[in-house]
Image (cartoon, rainbow, N blue to C red; front, side):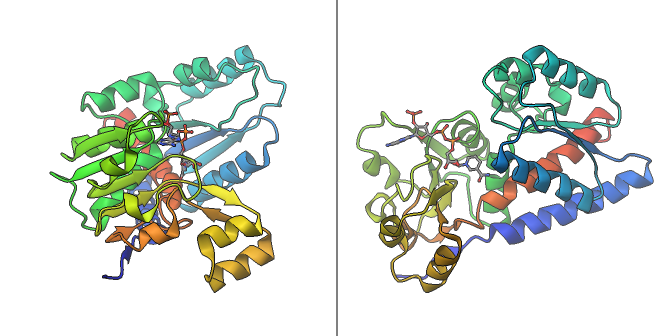
Length: 307
Ligand code: NDP
């Protein structure tokens, strides 16, 4: 068996970020500084880390960024007000509302209130519809990043059988649409799919966006396939660790030090059957922020008719 190729998401994300920084510089010469507003409600530790990374990255790339932090007790009306103000600001090109929101806030109403022009997460129904109908749109960051991984790794998409496990609005559905646009033959699977392995074994490109550790096992993979593993699952028990990583000394050291590690939706043994795959961590994950930055610059250009 050939050694599978590891698709290095960190390297590809770094490349995209360098391109974004160059574009930001070119825009600066025209007096334009793309701006990203991040709205972080309350004190969810994971959200705080994500948002801090997003703000830091925007600044590193020469974008303007503004962090807005309404309290945990904020109402839907107050949040709609925050969004309306951001929609109106000329220095803001992208609006990011970090999820999850507290339960008293109507998240759907809020996401629909974001101006589609500034919807850098690509969650607004107008952008979803534009994407679906092949019009210029801001595409959701994680799926857009997955396409970048394939293209920049010279993995053919047109005519290939692509199988997507998962049909969420954030990953499964949009990656299916993007793969279709690239002329793959796309099959979307979910929890009601019958004999999943018989479907996934046809995949030249297999996307796992399920949210279950090590779900994809070797017999589900066509030898030589490309696997994109979107899953981020934290495991902290020794038993689970051994189930996925027995014998992986580097991983074990990190696990013992931290008390936990991250496993994707694909079992490490299944990667061995693949021709190429995105590791977890360091595969699909890093692309999300990179594409958020790219979307912000794109939104700035689209809004000013510079594209
Ligand atoms: P969701 O929970 O919204 O969707 C999971 C999907 O998996 C559903 O469509 C579900 O089917 C399907 N599914 C669940 N169990 C099975 C099963 N036994 N067989 C087949 N299909 C099944 O998850 P997300 O799409 O939001 O996220 C998926 C994973 O990706 C998570 O681990 C998440 O943390 C990670 N993620 C990573 C990102 C990044 O790298 N930046 C960004 C976003 C997510 P059904 O619809 O029938 O219930």
